Image (cartoon, rainbow, N blue to C red; front, side, top):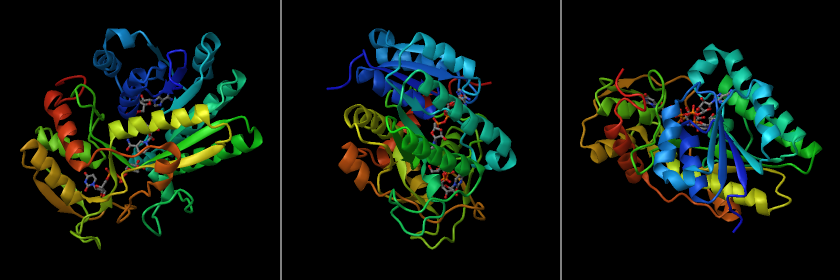
Length: 351
Ligand SMILES: NC(=O)c1ccc[n+]([C@@H]2O[C@H](COP(=O)([O-])OP(=O)(O)OC[C@H]3O[C@@H](n4cnc5c(N)ncnc54)[C@H](O)[C@@H]3O)[C@@H](O)[C@H]2O)c1
Ligand SMILES: O=c1ccn([C@@H]2O[C@H](COP(=O)(O)OP(=O)(O)O[C@H]3O[C@H](CO)[C@@H](O)[C@H](O)[C@H]3O)[C@@H](O)[C@H]2O)c(=O)[nH]1
C-alpha cells in the first residue's frame, strides 16, 4: 500500500463537481488533502459537505485555501508552507459555448492557471501531476471506440485549452524527465455520491444533458431540448459514454498510485469511460425510471459541433491502471436522482 496520511495531495478545483467526489475517495484512501479553489464555479458548502461525508476523523486530513491559480502568489503561499507529494489538477473552466463567446477567459483560467501551477510545482520540486483532460481532445473521432493514440483535434476554444495543456505536459516531461504526468481523458461524468450530499450544481442554465434532465425532473425547467433526433444511430439521438463520478474519482486514485509506483511513466494519457455508449433518448428513459418522473422533451436541431457517437476504449486504463468502471446507467441515474431530490436547488437552496 502506498497510501498513508503522510502522502499529501494538492487538489486544485477540489470544491467542484469531480473534485469533491475525488477528495472523498482520497481521504478514505488514507491521503492527506489540501484543496485550492477560487469558487468561480462552486461554493464553500460543497467543501463542508465533503467533511460531513467523510466524518470528523478523516476531515482532520483536509485543508482548504481560497485562492486563484492565475495568481502565482496564492500558489507560492501554499507550496512554501507545505510539501506536496503530488497534484491533482481539476481547476479550470469547462463550458463549450461560453468558451466560444469568451475565448480569452478560457485561455486565462485554463492556460495561465496551469502554467503558473507548473512553475510553482517545479520551484518546490513537486513533479507528479494528474491532469483533467477530456474526450473533447478526440474532436469528431474518425473511429470508435476512441483509443489514446488517436489523432487529437480541438473543436472549440475549450477543447483547444485541453489539447494545448496536453501538449504542454508532454513538452515539459520531455525536457525534464523527472516529471511524472498522467493525463486523464474523461468521457461524460454524471451521477453523484451515494449519500445524496454531493453532486453537480451548475450555475445558471445547465449546458450538459444530465444536469438539465435533473432540473426538469425537480420542476426548475419545463422540458428537455433534445438536440438532434435524426443522427444515424439506433434511435436517432446522439450517443455518449456516460461515467459515474464515483468511478471517475476512483480512476484518479488509481492514477495517483501509478504515479507513485512507476518511475518511468513519463507523460501518459488514459481514457476514463465505461466503453459503452448510451443515446440521449435512452438516458432520458433511464432517468424517468429511476426518478418516477416524466421528462417532457422537445425535439430540436442538432447542436453545432456535436459528434454523432463517442465512447471510450477502456483497455489501456484497465491494463495499466488496473481500473475499470463499476457502475452502469441505472446507478448513475439512481444516484443523480437521490442528489436532486435531496437538493433540488443545489448547495445553496432555493433563491
Ligand atoms: N464535467 C465534465 O463534463 C468534464 C469533462 C471533461 C473534463 N472535465 C474537466 O475536469 C475538471 C473538473 O471539472 P468539474 O466538472 O469538476 O468542473 P467544476 O466547475 O465543477 O470544478 C472546477 C473547479 O475549479 C475551480 N476553479 C476554476 N478556475 C479556478 C482558478 N483559476 N483557481 C482556482 N480554482 C478554480 C472552480 O471554482 C470549480 O470549483 C475541469 O478541468 C474540466 O475541464 C470536466
Ligand atoms: O440540453 C441538452 C444537453 C445535451 N444534449 C445532448 O446530449 C448529449 C451529451 O451532451 P453534453 O452533456 O453536453 O456532453 P457533450 O456534448 O458530450 O460534452 C461534454 O463531454 C465532453 C467530453 O467529456 C466534454 O469535453 C465537454 O466539455 C462536455 O460538455 C449530446 O448529444 C447533446 O446534444 C441534449 O440533447 N440536450
